[in-house]
Length: 69
Image (cartoon, rainbow, N blue to C red; front, side, top):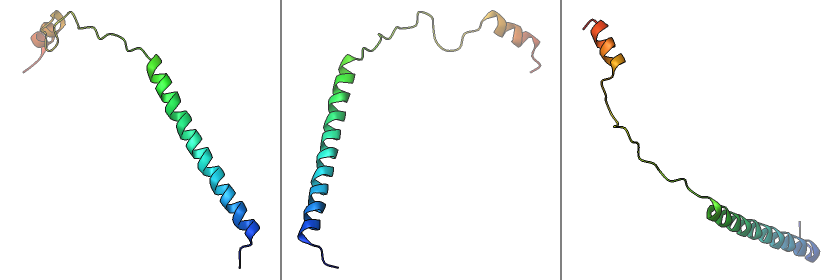
């Protein structure tokens, strides 16, 4: 089956259209991501005032006194 000149032109114009749509969509995504990241404010990380890690508290001492080791 031979392609006519008209069908070759329509295929080429479809390809150009799809290339343009993809390029425009990618550009819009980059711009949107740039604008979104610029407006996000990260909260300040607060350092905990209490000690981290193992702490022997009253309920821990109660558990140890009742446990059979």
